[in-house]
Image 1: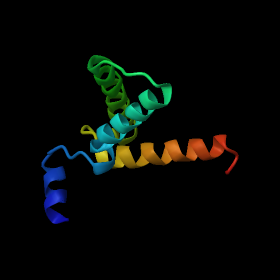
Image 2 (image 1 turned 180 degrees about the horizontal axis):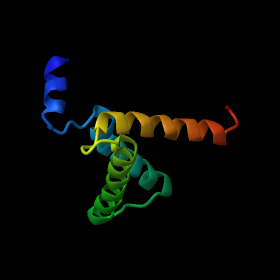
Image 3 (image 1 turned 90 degrees about the horizontal axis):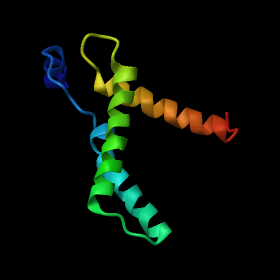
Length: 95
């Protein structure tokens, strides 16, 4: 744990797993959408959609993890993930 804290304090950017791995999960979701619609998208269309998804994830990390002069991507990803789940639960009437 100490090397990570030292790296963070030194200003080294760290992408948390939930944000860094989102590209693979999003690609699987795009593939399922193609299969459900029984259509194939060109690689450029998939890349463009994935690019927008990753930009949204980055923006959420910055929004929720940017209180300091350097974005805390771990905090941003954790808070953004919590907000997304909480909003979904509220929309379903669970909370």
